[in-house]
Length: 95
Image (cartoon, rainbow, N blue to C red; front, side, top):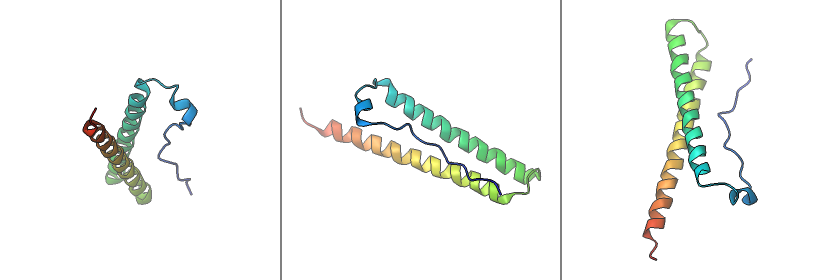
């Protein structure tokens, strides 16, 4: 039986390391995460094509690939929503 692999991890950030990072690091983390979501979606599509063409008879593997890509996409959407909420909150602050 094949081992289930993880979707991926975000880089760990300790409180001390946060102050050492530059302003472009957040954008880089988001970009890498979006690229990973895209890779998972492409893998999912390829797995579906293999199953539909008969190259692969492992339906479970296909379903797992689809679920991984769906979960990663939903996580990305939630992160985006939180970033937008934080931005809106900051814009409401009166200076």
